[in-house]
Image (cartoon, rainbow over all chains, first blue to last red):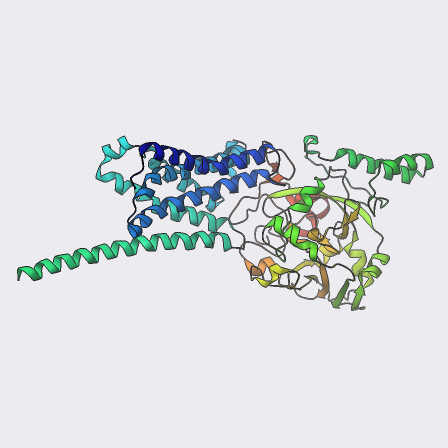
Length: 212
Length: 314
């Protein structure tokens, strides 16, 4: 893609606003009292859903590039990751500020008794170092370690999914959809990795053969 | 024999006080028998079918939750696991004619038409708290009659130790029954002393009118000291049994949902705390309410469980 830098800025701004849209709509609905009988839960679950969706979007970009050979989606990887963190932060705030009303007593009573909340907190804390090291400067500073650190996103995707499964009462259809998507995305990476390795091996073998 | 329990629902949680008070005024007027007062009461009262039904014992002067909240936020897995969708899909259920099959340890088994049951059992209003196992709660003004009075008419035998209730099975209309989220039909049960307790009612209406389909029309159980899933909807069969029946949620997850399912802040669900509840209709910034043991009805029902380990029999 040989688009002008100017155009890319405009496209990025568009994607940014689009990614912000779920927040704007939920906020508007809350303000206008249109979130139904249990608005705290609606906000809480809404932010959680969008966290998981942005994690999925972020994970789709690399395989897309590898399969199609187009590198433009990589320009959005950081933004998608940061939006996942943005919605995870709102999800965390909806829990602590709205659901628990910032009460330490409520936190102490309710969190240790809820494995799914513990898993959610773990997921959120794992996301923090990734958000903090998302800048270009940090990427440079960490060098090869940056890539290693950011592989945490696979752990995050899985703990987020476990968190979802653990909170459901009987109908697992929603978390199963996310499980399928994440499975495909991770399987895709594994296959691409094996394929690359295989190709490298073939190359090594071919070279060996030449030498003989 | 009006027994008043204490309540800690705040006046700020009131949503339709005007409607509520006009009805109180009307009932008072009716009791006083003053024609003049009655007329002014009528002018203020709702036009509901059961507007002149009197308040029964055990009802508390609580402020009912907003009608729209109660009718749009229902757990009715027969239609959908999504509360909003269930509320919409339930509209297609036909609730008349309706009959209830009575079987088991009774002297008068048979198939009873709902109209006959309603003729035999005078209606009364009971304003009760309703606490869901999912840690939310509401206040509902039910229209119904004591289950015990109805059961007595079927003449339970001495070996009737439990009562089993079954919901309608009709996957053509109840589209959720085409999935295997739970084992269908939905079955619930009570111990005979719980069933005969005067707090336990069968409801056919709420808010002075017929029950909307999504709230369990045309006939549902209401056991205010137990989690909501015990209060089974759209009942078509009642069996009196010698042994404890298998109940839907208990079969689905025996570690999480017991037969008793008494509201108890001291016994957590294995995956979440039951210490507090979100009151439907409260502002998004209001704190949750502390859950009361037996949902605040301990004074009336705690003796049913004396000597029982409620952690074991959850």
